[in-house]
Image 1 (tube, one colour):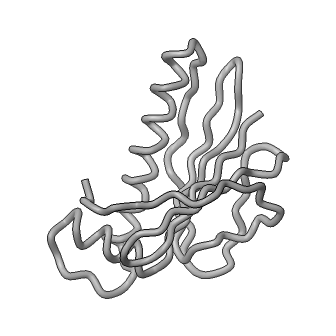
Image 2: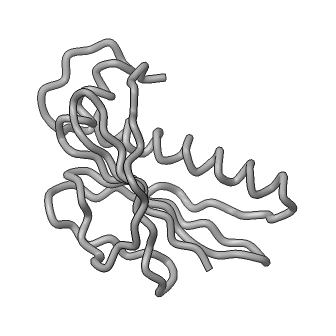
Length: 134
């Protein structure tokens, strides 16, 4: 939807609960067979670029529109993950997205397991997908 080229980096275990980006969307996933959460943390430059491309508007700071886009992108990615798990017979329910704004925000995953973080690089900046499942 944003027409960006996001190049994945090397996945790694994350040993901190501090957000890697400036704006983070998060959703919990729960079901009878699995429980976990997904967080997507965007650098300011990356999310401003994504928002501008999705909406066709000039955006120069993190505002309510950007926060809405973070929530929507988080919903879309988590919804796709839910669909893939469902195809494997694992049913999950999703919570509404929670958005954290600002540097060094604390991400509280729904389970006490170190998340796996997958970095992505775009032309404008970085974003990070964190997955934490039990």
